Length: 370
Image 1 (tube, rainbow, N blue to C red):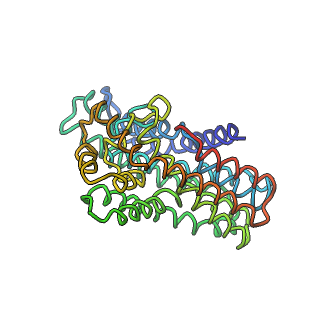
Image 2 (image 1 turned 30 degrees about the vertical axis):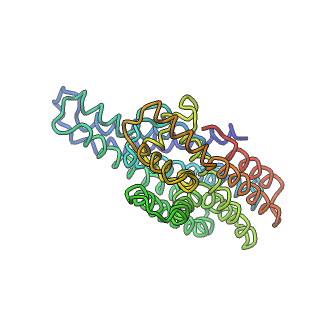
Image 3 (image 1 turned 90 degrees about the horizontal axis):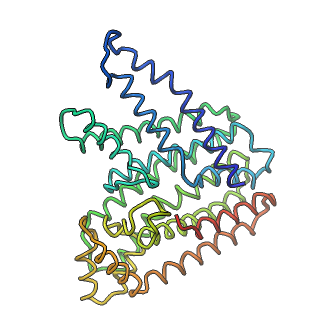
């Protein structure tokens, strides 16, 4: 059903964005009627809407999938009606808003194999020969696009047609995830900015804290709880899914960390070793530094986070990650957390369809190469 979910989510996002066209056009009506030049308000706002459509057109759709199957696990397939589909799809608008902002903060040029939003705005500025710094314009445009997607995500859920009691149950989950991912992102920014300290154990704990709030809750735990609340799940089911989501969410991010260092660019859509170039202080990196002797750790630190990192230096860093034992350690954590998540599903009474699907999703979340 994964293909059906991806298609269904894509269709509902496309329908919603199309429904925003009159709103965008109304804001642009003040363009001079006798103007024959391009680049007026209508053209510029259409660019924003086009980029919103492009940025939300692909992806794994994991968050909507966790929400839909969380609902099924609680109440059965028949509970997944059109409003639930629409509300679940809206989670991907929230997700893409975070990706757009993330690329600005990380200075990432690519997203899913295409220029990141800020790079596309920057290119547009150059093509129009406008005033000012194209890169600054690009960053500003992407920040505003991300903000718009956050607001549209909320609007999409509000207008989905959910039963008032179901929406009331699920809203606290949405409020929580918006706060958690924002503050988790800030903790990540702090982790990148703060110089490494001698306390290697503290570095590991910091990386784990960032993962829990920036990724684990946001990627798996809150989406599956959101769906379960829409399905009217009881306290025991919610507790089991909370455990499932936390464990699997961490495993999901640790797989991302491994791919960020060792992933194939043609598959991930991101430059090979991008996390090494950006200096991402992931759990994999924390374990790497803890597993190296002082002299080798100094060599790692001298290369890690260099924007001009070349192919030879990237391969050297990858070798040090492997040599430290960090990759083996993190792979073992992924396996353990996956097993913990699946075990939680067996502790409560879930529908057979929901249990089976959430088990498959757990495997897909950790055994992926993109």
